[in-house]
Image 1 (cartoon, rainbow, N blue to C red):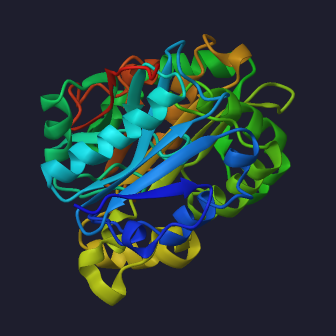
Image 2: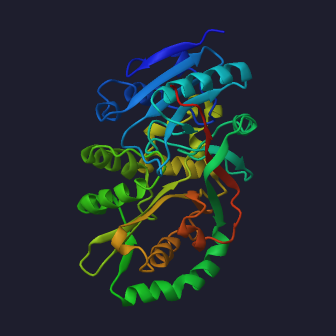
Image 3: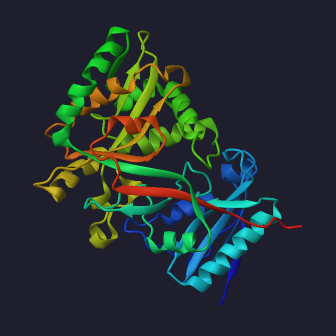
Length: 372
């Protein structure tokens, strides 16, 4: 078996980039950029190595002094692709654990795709018919089975809840008193378009840094890069009618809810030349095409982030945010996908119609030996 070790930072061979079984294809250019010596993750102290068994599997191991580890002596695996070849996967994980053990780590966890800013978690279950979302893990379920058979256990678990539009009137009626109470205390909520986000960019990024910073495996990027990520990547994709901000009486943004259309049906590799690259998605350019593709059904809305400044937590503002956004769903969307929320996150409380979650995900970990 030909196990190729790849020093990072540095170029990734075609054999590494070519391995992907996702229904929504990865953009190889993203991995090329993130493996370059000039990338901020390496420049800020990140250490990594990658391995590939051509045509059979690949993996990378990541370690960063600023990564969120929840106090665990842990390094991360990511960029894992498996064809189901158990021998190859054993060799890949042995190499990754050897590298992390040599750095003094006693636990391996993942997937974390270098930093959770770029993605993390494995798909454990998807039992609804709506297909994969952009940015959602889309691994074969046998990868989870392989990990658990070898002693990996879920470290953190998450779900995506489906909330059909027909249940929203009852939900809105239930939370309306709390939303009205927030308004009576001087708070307001309104949609955020590109101009609004630009005007409140400092507050938007402050909230994201706090929220993302609570995610396992997060490494904070330079602030200016996160600002560009918001303006160049998030804003063009988002629903300007559903993305919602909450403001205090002085018009300071205290929290926001980032919403995309569920673009997945446009991006499926099975569409061949008609598939839209996820990195090319733009609301103005692609929302009409999505509606046309799905007609007579309506597209769904994917709530990707609900985040508040620390001082706004506990003030009862989530009902105000949800109540405001729900009004724009009626008649235009099939419902909400409350995307990839950790099972102990309080936003779970607002979407009870699907209490179990039809999509489940986890970050997995196991102990390993530290090199002497």
